[in-house]
Image (cartoon, rainbow, N blue to C red; front, side, top):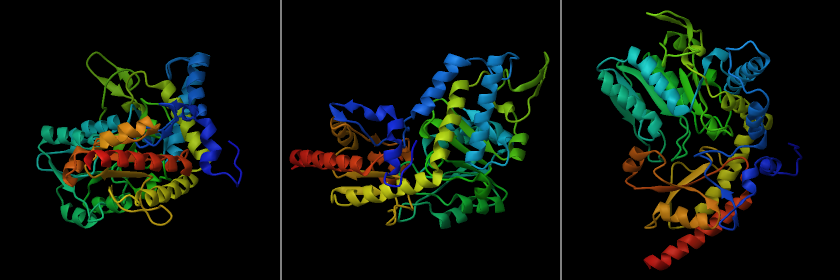
Length: 420
């Protein structure tokens, strides 16, 4: 990538994303579904191909050259992830298939060993299903009690209510960093500090923050943090769990099998050191290596530059959407520079169903998300069946937003004629 002062960030990187060059329904693709999954740059795609063409072998288990090269690349990617989120040790990074598996790992390993009947787990009404269902299952197994932080009038995390929920019974707080529906950025550092005063552990779902802004787990002081590779320019099927070293060391294995063992006897086994204790079986080797390539790609641009550029796009997107009197936008407004919320906008348009909006926009080549965004409880809380969501990434442009806005206007006009 060649950077020049006259180009926007998107101008400098778009050539790296081959999928963006195609047409959909005869129109240039406008991809505004980045909160669901990001597109992949050539550098990541090439890394996948190179592994399978040049050094496809299992990791950690072979003395031959291909295995050694694969192991070096696989473990090198772990170092890159640790550096990206400022972990204190590479051994605090555990590869998982995705953030959902990472949360389940904590729920089954730490949760089963530590949660007792009557213990309290604090979640929020805005959580993704991945950060609800594992804790529901844990509560059913253990007799724990789930409590939920609600929203302020601005549709953000209600910190004052959260303070009233905390007690000596609180054993865990699990909260999303950025809501994939509301776009609000939750005060995770303060949440961790308050929870730790009561001896509770804190897990942060960072799927919507790691790809878009600088993250420092030591500054946040969370006990665990999870993210999915496919939302951060990496392949599907790879994610990671960060955990404080002393917390991970005290947790029993999540799954048994090869790789996670030290020695195996007929009647018992001893377990490998971190992080391999939690990585049973042959891992997603190519995907992990490509995750490292994605981290390289993001860090070469600079997470601060990505955050600033996406904030500018967010401000422009909101400015355009606010011109529609029919739209109800959810979550907090960005400030004039676009900061204060994530690079996404979720909305409804009167009687027009979100799925109908999305379907007609697709005819114009514009890809947005519609439905409940894996936040059923939040939609029930807001008393709406579904929403439409346009979500941005650093490879999007103002011109793409203009095309989206024009297509949205035409779509709303079409339905206005139907509804009268």
